[in-house]
Length: 303
Image (cartoon, rainbow, N blue to C red; front, top):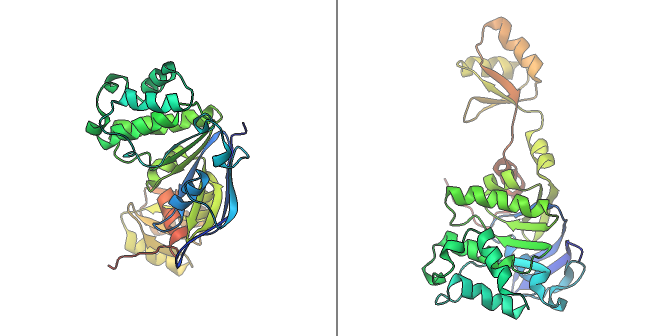
């Protein structure tokens, strides 16, 4: 099976709300694709359409070239975690997985394997209803991997994980991609996607706002800006502004745009303005996300 997710022209309306308005993107094998956007952007609806839980008004969503409802033993083709609470709380973790495995014609050996992969082997005989959110996330991921699928879809997989769990999840997602799988991760935690995703699909108001590699997006947002660290910010700001630069404070010093590093050094050095660092601005994924979605936020607080 071809390990891709192809979303093409999806439209979906709920009453007066246009949830999807031409959503189009492709998730390719061998990379983690981050799927991000503000509340109401259409992320959850898109995932539900991909997995056959909602029918689109128009457009298509294919997994490995086929609509999800046409897949036989779907866990062998695509594994998904949309809701970590979607389990029978009285079942043990092992029995929960055995029940799912039996429905797909999978054996008990694979259950033991995914319990080990997700670090739940020591909790296999505990009732799932007593699990923390982080452990439920792991159990949901174990269920998603039962059929060893070439396509994996995870919605907010970092939720509820402690710091060790977050490190594990980063490495786990990277390993899935290195195995050649197509991995789609919906998340609000930009810092985690920056360390994990190779590609990013940013959505807002039911449309794709950006579909690009993380490296390209960060480079575009950083632009020609320079980070300047100085113990004389007022003096530096005055000199640089007079030379035509735009200068704004940041958490560690000043961000300068409109002048290259060499010219900044030439301006500050002869005038004795001290500085400890002049470097190309390193944009964060959160910064890029905020810039892209600033006009697509449905609910915004006041300050």
